[in-house]
Image (cartoon, rainbow, N blue to C red; front, side, top):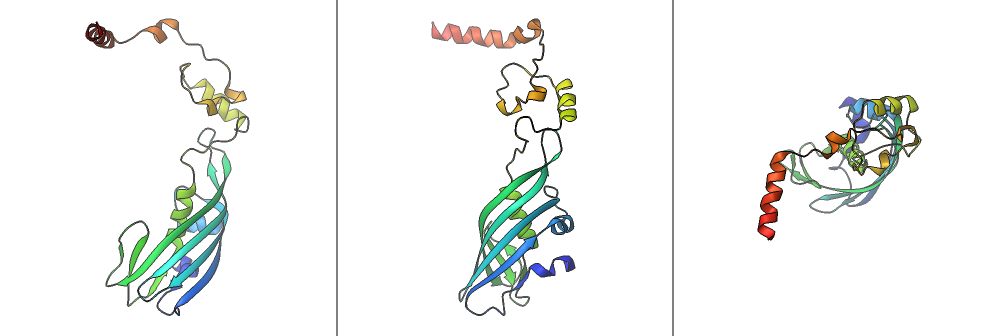
Length: 195
């Protein structure tokens, strides 16, 4: 954790009241943390710590951009990050995560390292599906993808309708209209019930 000393917050020595911290997470942070979702980015974090007699309430305002691979063409693309997260820290005998928002740290240590929490907050703010806007994907990769993709006419993925991949794919009529005979039998049972 030597790489992440900057993200240590000494809670034991914080006076009661509100304290503010600012962090700038750049490419080195993401490379050092070695997470599998983000390797590049520039993100500003504003942290407000409110100490009460029994706990520390941490509020994170996180804004910036991260680079992630496009799900379609694998080229890097920017994803804007704008999220607000909350973490409650309490002292106890040993480290424990009581819930997504509540962490217990050993009182004798009295400090918490926020590096992994910051990374997780950012990773959770990234949409599950990330693709370039229509027409912005790598043309070479899109044409290879089109060449190796079999799609039916009722896929319904409108985002996939990219100019570089928009050509119709020919589907053999015999294959597209053939149904499994078991389904035909089930349809017959359903029709008998309706009559």
